[in-house]
Length: 370
Image 1 (cartoon, helix red, strand yellow):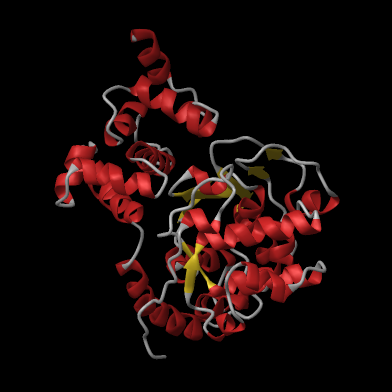
Image 2 (cartoon, rainbow, N blue to C red; image 1 turned 90 degrees about the vertical axis):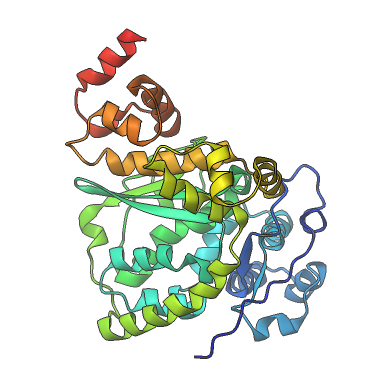
């Protein structure tokens, strides 16, 4: 397969989202044409005029000649909104997944389809996500008898719309079933949007154990479900496709959003305690003011990215039973355990000891000393 440098049509985010009530989506955040095609197919099934939708987005039929080409995420969000409004379909994100297929995402889709197990399929998606979208990252957490997947977008402004969150989370549920041929029922679901009218389709997809207005989006499954073999597993083909994906994704990473580059440095420096914006700016050979300006352009902030990274690392560290709460706090750049405990509760809705399911006297003592 010949390598081609990524082509991205950059349009003004303000033009793509003319409604001032909607969040401004950074033009650096993009999605592959596969997303648009599948969404247009879903819209046609709901009675929308496919050609008219394309024209309103400023796209021509030639758009379908290269589905690996990336387009502004703002256009995808606009398309979701247009279809949702015209069809009066609040479950459009779920229907988008039902209308698609894991193989519809090109090289990445085929790599996922041939993975040995469901866990390896999703790890493949997380590893090569740049091939289809570059808005954030996801994390697999092993929590005893359960396995949790959490999604960390670079800015919370892109998860204010329910349809976009559903297009990600419903994919974890419905595509898991498509890949294994078995019903994979979530144990619990957390979403950032407000509680909607609970349609039959919503309940069939997520079940009834759903928490709304949460600070993050995540789904917990039975750990044994993640180890299920896939229908069309082919380990040799999977390895070959992953090798190709590794080469292709290098082009996408070279042009990744500034927020992702900064997040990478945050993760590298966090263990060293150098988590200030000044230290990161120096590492990137730019001024602090430039960092702030570039992040403002992407509608995010240094604090938001640092919070994401701390949350992600905290969940990993809390699974290491030999680490005390104070150990973890210091690893995350906090000077005392109580500060970490307060921050963690704002992220997860529970204290570190509650998350671990143990009685952590150090937390209690830390709070009593403050």
